[in-house]
Length: 186
Image (cartoon, rainbow, N blue to C red; front, top):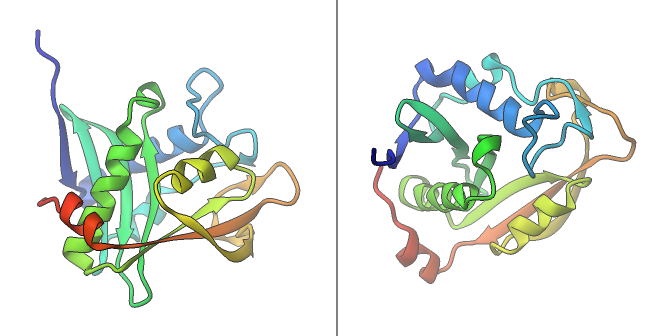
């Protein structure tokens, strides 16, 4: 039997529960399910609720999905803005991590941002206690901006289990090579 191909699509509101479940499994999994990108040892509680995912469905905001058959195996949120396009909530099913799917989703997010939001700068945030994730993004051209914020305790994205966790901002400028190499139609 031939393996099913991965298929890229734009999420709809019917996908909200599955997206929230995927993001929570990727960021805050059980010990048995933990992939390399988790933060379960740093933050307790859900990473995102279904209500928070639902709130992302508005103008200038898109969630891209990668499906294997009917199952969502990866997602990323892309939000256009005047000062740059924010890329966040990049998540891959823990059982499928370390196969290049996260890199692929980041490329799709960047291409989508260029084509649909006329992006000139990509922005994202990473927890200060995640050096492996910071290194992942730096290898892809993102640089720290120097902007540091306290962990958003009131945002409903979990409770830190260690002290000193901060949110670091990263940016990447779009250049002509990026534009030519990554235009993707969805």
